[in-house]
Length: 178
Image (cartoon, rainbow, N blue to C red; front, side):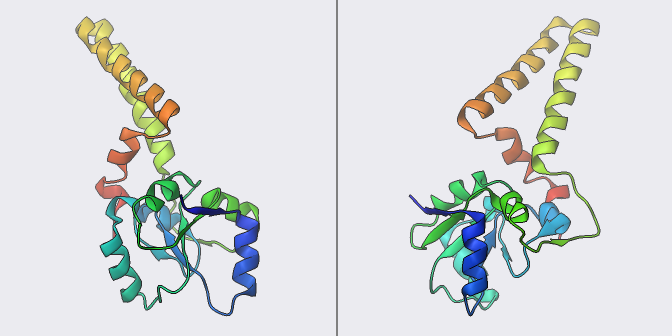
């Protein structure tokens, strides 16, 4: 199990350290474009592996001495990432970028504002449920199954804290623009 560090403790450590800690931002390109922690290394969760992290660190002239701090929006993706990084000393930034901002971290904001993955999931789920109901009443009752399927997926995501729709949406072209 990876170590978890609160945002305020991380900021104090960052201020006290002579060199910047290595922060791996696991969010999508679109989320990074909206706002990011300066000097963080971008490596989306769906691309993460030990080999890819080693390549990313060397291309950013980062030394792998000391821990690698894992950052996402709220902390969930960092937990998933920590389980993929056996050879690295991984530290999860508790509460993610949201907690860092609340603790007073300086965050760079981009000119373009993108819709977060969480909001994309809610929009997509809502549209699919509405579509299933409308088509169920107007075309064929079998379309009600679409609404039921999406509802079951949302229930599963709420119970397990793993969302298949978010997994798919994170790989969509609009979330991975260069």
